[in-house]
Length: 174
Image (cartoon, rainbow, N blue to C red; front, side):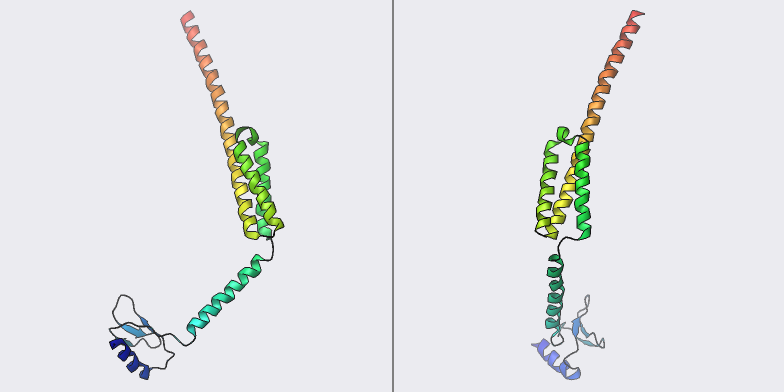
């Protein structure tokens, strides 16, 4: 009740368009227009139609989202798709079909999904599927390279063991 009386009293001093806010960290309200202290109770009066203006602004911004989304595939997303194809070819060249067939299959599925999204002109799905395809294809290539290096290391270890055995035989023969 005190807040209402305080506001009615202060309304006489200020026009109804003055915004009264709460100063955080203090227990006093103030007018942002003149920075005048109003008392211990913090309360906020909004300008007429402020809420209406905010809602209209938000609707105006969201109206562009639909327009942008309906325009088709952007050149940047087309580049992402091409990057995914290049990554796929690099994985196939690295023999990912032998060392990481599951990852290669998953990358291929994402690439197909991107192609379907492109034909449906769904820019968001197209971009997501393209990026996932590229990432999975790069992962398949990296996995393939790791497996190839492991095979080389294993072969080198076998050769090293043979050389050590030969050295041991030569020491024993002397």
